[in-house]
Structures are given as C-alpha cells and as structure tokens.
Image (cartoon, rainbow, N blue to C red; front, side):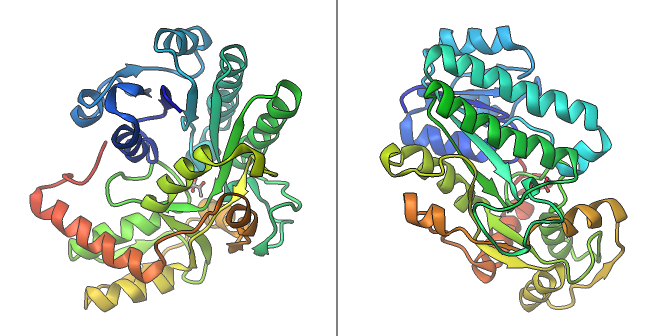
Length: 325
Ligand code: AKB
C-alpha cells in the first residue's frame, strides 16, 4: 500500500481509519473522500480530501488516476436501520458504489478492502459460535447488500485476479465518532447518557446479546488484513472478526460499576429489535486468527474503562469535542 483512497472517510470507521493510515503511511499518501461537503478541519488539513459520491463512477476514476491510487478502503455505505428505512437508496449507494469501486480497481489494478458485517447473516444462521462458512440469508436490505458485496468481491478475485479483502465487523463502539443509524448504536449512546448524568432508554431488549468491537481493534483489523501475506489468505473476503459479546443489561451493569447511580430502561423499538434478533450473538473468528493473526486488544471491561476515560476528557473539553462529525 503506497497510495490509498478511503471512501466514506467522514463516517464512523473512516474518520478513525484515515488518521491511523496517515500516521502509518504519511499524510500525503492517503486521500480521504467523503460525501459531506464540509469535512472536519483535522481530516481536510492532514492530507488530501475530496468530495465524492461513490455512485459517480467517472468522479471516482478521476480521483484514482489523478492520485495514482493502488489501494481503496471502500467504507461508504448506509447502515442497517437507515437502510431499512430507505431500502432503494441503500441498494443504490451500497451496491452501485461497490460496483464502481471494483470496476475502477479492475482497470487500475488496485487492492480493495470491503467491510461486511454481522448484518450479512440472518435468522437461519446459527447464532452462537457462528461458523465462517454457513447459511447467511439475511432479511434486511443492509444485510442483502453486505452478502452481495461479499460475493461480488470474491467474484472479482477469482474472475479477474483482483486483490479484494474484507471482514465481517460486529457492532462498533467509538469514543470519537457517533454512529450513523445502525442497530448497535445504543452501545455508544449509553456512554454519553451515563457521563451526562442522564437516564438512558435503550431501544433493544435487556437480554439482546450481540457481537461487538471497540474501534481501535476495528482499525487494526482492517490494516492487518490489508498488510497480510496474500499467500496465507484462504477466505480473503468477509472474515468473521469479533472481540466481545454482550447484551444491553451487561453493558449497563459494567458502566454502573464506574458511574454509580446510572439508570436504564428498555423501550423496545420493534424495527431494530427484529434486526438484532436476526444477527449472530457470537461469531467464530478462528479463520481470521489462523490466516492473518487477528487478535483483539479490548474485551468489554477494558473497552468500558477506556470509553469513559476518553469521553470524560472530551466532555470536559466542551460539547461534541470528541465527535468527528
Ligand atoms: C449496524 O448496526 O448497522 C452496524 C453493523 C453491525 O453492521 N453497526
């Protein structure tokens, strides 16, 4: 990786992956592309930034050729709850965006990282110790675009020899960036409520257990996979990766250990509850561990401690100080 393009650079993963890659490879070698016109000053000033709608194939090609890009981290995507609300738009952005990236990559010989998700599984999937290779059959538009994306990336590898790689992320928790319309967003919102001394109404039921990961591990997973020896990759696309598995009740109990008096109620949103119930509770990520050495650094108690530390610093610095929006 010498010249990297990140699509969706202003989003949940992109706003932390971009600085991490700039630290590693140098600011000028990382082109951040986002849909929103006004990026954070930090993102725009530490290296090249351009506005990009991934559905615009010509604009994408122009950026890739103008900057001599050899690797694309394609993060632009609508998340699960938003996609369920706007399924036509989700198909357009998630599928046509990926198609454009793969086509540009095919003609310019770029490597491609594509993040899939636990959303690529469905109600027929074994929810515990979910195997790497198993029945998927998602019943949400988000999941349909993710499983189609996995298959498309595999196809471009076998048919055209393109270097496509990807992981299935669980719910991601970040101290820096608010999530944008996912089913697992409660696991971030709850921290802001606890630290502000507010009561939290959780939209998932107390015992809805899901796979989760702290953002530093998610960033490390993307970088490690893209730097891994290609000869060792058997699965290539859509490696199960996880770090912890908990329900809202478990997270609330751990937060209460640090924030005495924190209170929570459960007011279930049927849409997001149904999505969550169709997803794995805990994936088997042994293929990722075996093939490219995946190993998360944070379990749930470590994550909670660090989130509270990071967010209390940010909140002391002023409202929204920790948010890269
Ligand atoms: C979402 O809820 O949409 C995401 C995911 C698990 O893919 N966080």
